Length: 294
Image (cartoon, rainbow, N blue to C red):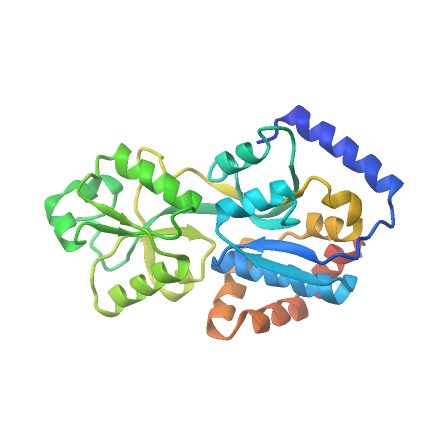
């Protein structure tokens, strides 16, 4: 992760580059990396639509797991990623990318107040299961069949979840790798059957609008605290794509609006949700694109 002095130095260099290349614009497609998480999919497809419609640029979406996504940005195979959880969850990935010098530049905050944790359906009695510590009870483990339902094995949430299993001494549990879609499918099946389940989760996510869920308390703090989601680009992206880079640096969504849009995407489609969001927030979109404040 960049320290304060490095950020100031990088900002100064980028500022000089933008002055010298005020109209710089590559003709190559903008390659945006993304992972099949609901928030990532909506934000990425919203950016894709606006870049194509407002900047007349072709966009290539590169779907991959989160670790290869950082590697792709660092090596320049991917121009931009819109799902960097900072300062904790993805810090190791970013440190590795920048280990031999700055290769990934922070374009700015996309949204804040994000959270990681483990959730259970609200019908699971809090008197029996309210904290991760309670998972050590034999009766609780039996009802959960010794399983915690996870997501992509390379996700930062899974790295922290593995550390949580170790820190809390949950040796009798299987942290089951899956995917974002696999996790929500398992959650839906359990809720339909009124069964107990513990799933790895995060805000923002459409499932909190679809189901009545609660986070388990994490007294050891192993799953981290509030996070901020940032856009990161390959180190040379600014200089060749000033207009698009500045657009992405201004693109910031309130969390409640993002979750509403994600729920809309689940009910309809991501394309419809993107179109509706643009229609309902035209003044904000205009600021993102032009930088003009009315």
